[in-house]
Image (cartoon, rainbow, N blue to C red; front, side):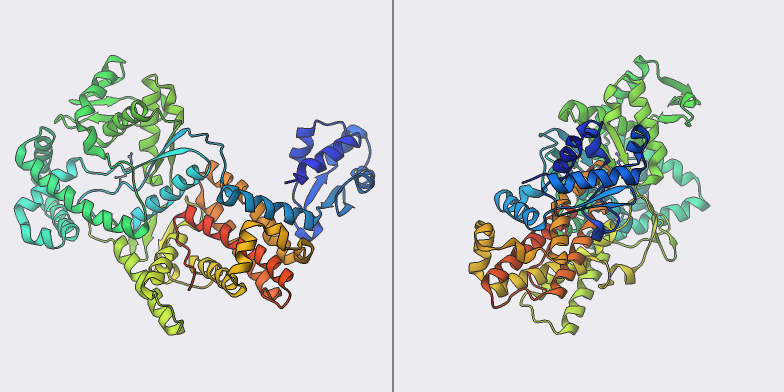
Length: 574
Ligand code: ARG
């Protein structure tokens, strides 16, 4: 289809403006107020070169454009040349392109199959999969989908926290106060109880900490009993995590967590040593980072056990060797900023130029109304409970409304879970927020259910229009519609948003910021609802109906695609 921006730039160039075509194109803006036009070319920069007032330049340019271009309306407004594109022509271009490309319309080949690792979720074994983890899980999943949409080959890694001194504590607590039946009945909640008790007791009796440390060293050395308990905790935990991932429709390509790297520790330490980066400090091994304004990184404790950071270094090297990634992305809370800065620097000091291809994508804290969450104190909200609660509440709302859906359970699931996910992705990821049941489950306003409902409304309009019209619109739209019938402000606004959607997807990908897309989908839904409120869609006149349905079809496809990138389902009936 025609590229109106380019055409505008070319026309401006041909009127003798002394700038490069690219420069002109880059200068073209979108007017703040849509009624002012579709494009605006500011003349202020030219004013200096031409030594003329911008208004005069704009006036002259506008005159020339009116005579020599395809644009509908060209105006000089305060030093800007404002341009309206020919609506029917534009709309038919979009509709035709969409009929040809289908979903590809929203996608891109920018990635060209390059490999991008997105590490996300990464909960800790034997600890609750709580509401704090939903952020990494949901943001990571949508970043993964964004890269896929941009044509990258994505590897989804769940770097499970399945290793470390806390397992010494857990095993220690289990042996002292635990019993098998309780763990089997409710694994994570029970293990959490032991873990909480451990910390209470350790406050009174600090020797417990030493005991736990010894147990972890045994685990690292592969002692049978410790390994067996650890394996059991891991299996039980994974079962619980999988339940949550199934509810969210999220899959991983690899669950290589921290324990996976336990046999790769010596090699890392040797390499650090060979590269003169290792120093001894009170019996422990550190990498000094003072020169870079960071605290030293402790990579091996004095008792010989390794640490979280050592495993991250090993994991990064392993990933480079295994996947030869183009980008290696970590979706992890901003509390770990220093941790990532430290080990990215260490990788760089080791001489790996791919250190620059590693990205930490941080996000803000979730707290509860009662204060920050604390696993140690047992103050957590379980993600599974949140999701189930949302589904339940949705079901009640649907029942109260008296809407008759055959598959009320299915719809409640899609809408309830969708509400939680959408809420997560609605704001800039870096913002801290307070988790609030009422807000998450608020079904009015700019929420997931609102967008899903808009989608369902579109689907219902298409059902009402009938299969024949819909099939025609999907296969050969331009034969059946008249774009001059859908050139009104409301229809045009919908098409314009959809036309621009792939730029928004690119922007969201580049910024690792799904909320850019979330907000855009709300914009589309709002534009669609204005369209829907303004005109009757299914009318007597078949050509008018078909033309309206073309808009409905575009909008529903865009919303569905957008939601799917966010990891949210779109029910056809609600
Ligand atoms: N398991 C950690 C936690 O729950 C997150 C792991 C982040 N990923 C990493 N490669 N360090 O806090």
